[in-house]
Image 1 (cartoon, rainbow, N blue to C red):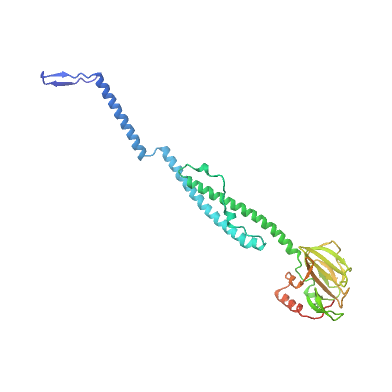
Image 2: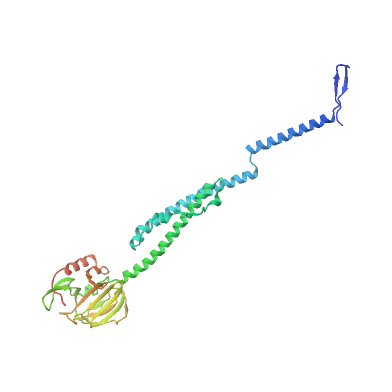
Length: 323
């Protein structure tokens, strides 16, 4: 039961009962509720400014973790870019240079993607710049990897072709040093043994006993093994590809047939003195694109520097040839 309130009436000099009107009571209630609402709103507002809700705390942690992950991602991309730069440098300066391929320009390796905005979906966020930059770097790295992969594929093909080329070109002496009597005559002007006239000698003459083994100087296919060419007697011609042909003349007999495939170092015939020859020896020639060239430049495969120097000195003497 509510308490009864009184007030002192100075006119009647007595206490009178306080009678509260309903309108006044409703007014007080309204003011109280309004004040409570305002106080509650202010409390919520102040709390939201200075205190985080559990959900906000979780989102803040998630955002902080995302930023940390992007920082780690950027560090990893730094490492990947460093490794790629090293591979690209070796690719251009060593591999492509060795195989005579044009270097790939840096602009081609690192160019981005023009045209349509590929990163529009990442715009409008608090960390849009961070996300967009990270994705741009990833795209450029991916492009670099694709370009480098294609370059290595090309290098692999060039290496295979280079290996084949190195195996086919004439690169060894056709007669072993141990079986040589001497290197009788080199490429250049020499005295003809029959006419005694000075004329150009297009090969090298290796003096050796009759029956000394003669070896193929590079991989190839035997194109001739006959005595049908004037002056050469029994001779063999091997097509090595790439425009190279080697010729072995004045043979005693053959160890190969026409169209037979041979490898460098295979026994193909034996030294003799058939055809226009003064004594048993091997006359050796090399053709490049149909032109006879000096064989002295094609002995790097089995001669030491000292042996080659001695051979070069002997080959340069203008003496009498044996054919």
